[in-house]
Amino acid sequence: MSIVVTVRVGEGLVFSADSASALQVMTGGQLAVAKIFNNATKLIQVKDYPIALATWGTGNFGTRSVISLVEEFEEEKLQPLLGKRRLDGKDVRVREVAEAIMNFLVDSYGKHIPEVAGIQQEQRPSAGFVVGGYSSDGFFADEYLFAIPEGTLKEARPNLPDGRPNFGANWFGQADAIVRLHFGRDDRVPALLERLGVEKGKIAQFAELSKTELQYPVVFDGMPLRDAIDYADYLVSVVIGRFRHTLGAPICAGPVDLAAISRSAGFMWVRRKRIEGDTVEGRQ
Image (cartoon, rainbow, N blue to C red; front, side, top):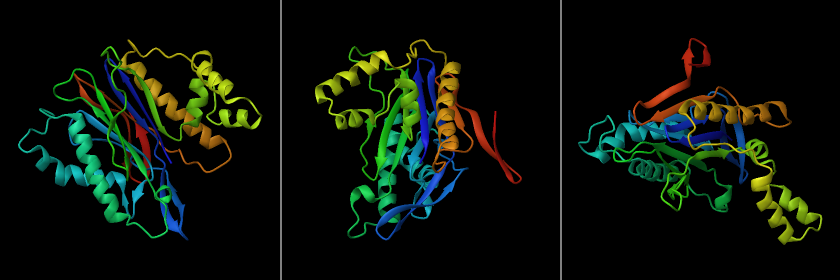
């Protein structure tokens, strides 16, 4: 019940996320949305490192928000893991931090969402995470993905076959509006064509052609960090607008949090929710 966008370019890495979070509960053996909050935190800096974490999917494990669990990990588990390393990001690796967070969340999930007899795995609430930023021994930003409760870590954008960094954008969660905009198609089209009797070989050919003939080309090689920030902000706004103006629950909504990370400047908030009195608003 979220939209998260990351953009990786030569100058840095951008994170953008909406603020809607769904409280999901098991009712009569079925997973149901009990409440949607529009001011949830889904994008944070990990400690004071040049590393960010964003999440999508269920917003809570039992009575705990997933972000509060990540913050608990930062305060109680991260420093013992890293030993005597300094907290300014020296001798810290993104993969190591991402894997440690994942393992902690796998354990937390088991504690807060116990298995119930008769409930299939796919019926249990799940959440996705992207962790990215700069390792002390790398020049370009790294990104890693994992899902809970599965707990398998993988690179979000592995290097190209020739070893060059793989620049581009990733989107996670309720991304159908981005797929339509960027690729000029809908993921349901192949099933519709099959229902109309189109041969599977032709459907596969159409899918391949659509990748080059229908999508909007975006040049990420050489893209300045400022433009990557604007692009990430734009894509999240497209999704929020789609759920605001079409029929159905506004499961992507609220202020957009936006952050950028560069090797020289580290982690930077571009826009972040702030609580002032009785209001929550985005600020530069």
